[in-house]
Every structure is written in structure tokens, then in C-alpha cells.
Amino acid sequence: MIDQPSCVRLELENRPENVSVVRAALAGVAEAAGFDEELTTDLKTAVSEACNNVVIHAYEGQPGPMRVVVSVPGDRIDVVVRDSGTGIRRLSSGADHMGLGLALISALADQAEFNSPSGGGTEVRMRFRRADTDTDAAFPADEEWSERPMDLADDDVVMWCEPVPLVRYLVGRVARAAAASSHFTMIGASDLYAINDAMAGLAEVAADGHLVVGISSSAHRLTLEAGPFAPLDGEEPTPALNRTPDRTEVNARRAALAELVDELSSDGGSLRLLVRDRGRPSQD
Image (cartoon, rainbow, N blue to C red):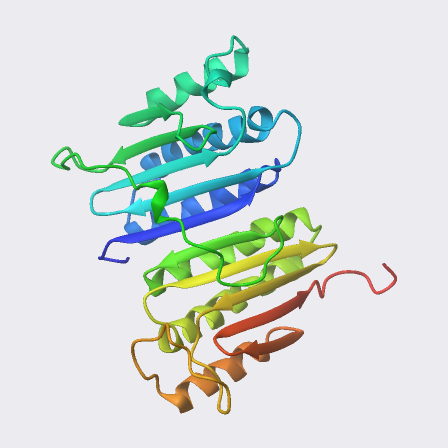
């Protein structure tokens, strides 16, 4: 368990398969926070409904961004799901699915708000309490979003993790959810468990404060780009790091991660990994 405030921010496209990516991240955050199975189920169900609303209604059949913030400040989880689509008027539609979905969100969350941000779109805010003694506080603000630190495509999954130990609970889950849409075999997906542990081990000695992970997928392959990390010998220093990591330990953990992936490259504070599905038949 992580006994300090934590936050995960997801930026992804409004594709149906990305709802499972969000659910995977929620499961990781809930485990890290020590939330029980019942509360975790309510969390995933309600947030899935909010995300489905973005997928089905926000952009009227066109692709568009979906942003999810999951924060754990104490004995609760706060979630914000936001789109930049047609706005709150779609939420008041008579469509059966939307009406049932919003009612379900309101029933499962301890607190729910449906807003129209000044910049357009719709924002659904949900709060799930573990303890009755939890005090009210403001939801995370949209202004907390920052620019992407890496050159990632619009259809990539981009995940901000803070603090760094949260990476151990998230990268493998989110990568496996993304791999499912890339038709990974069970053998290939199982490799992501070891890659998750190796990346988390590296982050714990070579990252500081937070880590950003971009995940892109195509048929039977995943690309992960993460940073900021401490650079390898000969590379430029990373200004984002506030401490000097043990260089020997960093290099050893990078080498261990390299053994598990098909390609590993680095550029300053960013690390790029290519993972091919080794369970794919050779004739495919």
C-alpha cells in the first residue's frame, strides 16, 4: 500500500477499448490505496459509465480526447472524467442509456457533479469515501493538467503517475489492457508482468516525484515511452530530478529491463521500449 496522497492522470482517445484501460488504472489505484473489493467495484462501474458517455455521445461519432484524473488524498478516491465535446446538453437528452448511466453514477458515488466547463465539453466529478469521517474538499481542478513531456501521438494512452511507487501498480495493468486491443496472446501479455516490475524498480531509483508513461499499440506490439529518468552516462542531465541517483544501481536496473524487451533506447530523461508479442505464431 501507498500511505501518501497519490494521483493518476490519463489522456486517451474516446475509443470503446480505452474504457478497459481506465478500469485497469482504477484497479491499480484502488489496490495501492488499500480499498476493499466492494468499493473498487463501485468505483470501476461508475467511472466506466462516465467514460462510456464520452465514447458514445461526446463527439457524435468522431474521435476526440478523454481525460481522467484519479486522486487519493486520504480515505477517499476522487475521479474527474472530462471531454471537449458537445457539452452538458447531451447529458440531459432523453436517450435511455444516458439516463440510466447518470442515475447509476449518482447511486454508486458518495458525491457526483455534472458540469459544463468554461472551455466547452462535459465534466463528471465523482467521490468515493472509505470512511464516514472523511471531510469534504474541492475536486481536482482541470488546471492541474500539464503539457505532454514527450512527442506522443494523439491516439496514445498517456499516464501521469505520482508518487513514483504508484508505477508498480499501474504500468502492467494499463499495458495489458492496451495489449488486448492489439490482439496480444496470453503468452505475450504475461510478459508484461515482469516488464512492469522491472520498470517500477528502475523508476524507484531513477525517477523523482512523478513519472509519465505513453503507451501506443499496433498489431502484436506495444511501445512504451517513459520519463523523466536519470540519464545514462554521457547524456545530458535531467533538470526534473531533484536528487542524484546511484549510477551503478540505475545502470543495473536499466540492463535488467533491457533483457525483457525487444528494443530499449534512451534520450536524455526519456526511455523508449518496444515489446513484441512472443506468443504470436511465426507464420502470422
